[in-house]
Image (cartoon, rainbow, N blue to C red):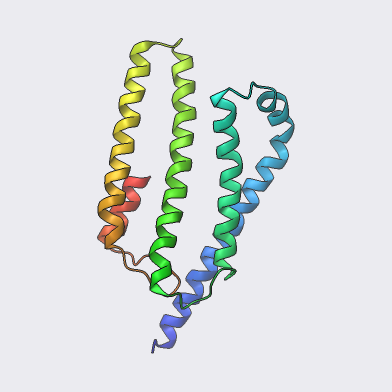
Length: 172
């Protein structure tokens, strides 16, 4: 049985995660609300074949849905601590993949903007494709090697150790 200091620490950490999750969700919803008019004017009017339109909508609304799911999870909507270990690993993988996919989508948008700034230069396109491929490869290898090594506490938070810190450094 955990002593009272461990319990207090777990409560404080859970509360911090709840506050961070709620503030992230509030910021995303606020951003959607204040820029919705611009979205209608500049994004919705683009052709349905425009990859920029779909990348924008994907990053915009998948991030909101994902943050809602993560927030509901922190409130105990799906399960409450102590969480079975069989749930923690798949949950962490899903959360990490969701985040990685959103990061990749944002990187694509930024890459397309840089490519446009350089007047569709073939050299810039090839450089961006190379950097993007290297980034994707590093993330894929990191997922394959590091995630199986993680261990989780009762709240499904990975224990902080050299493996988890290395994973976070590579992901960011």
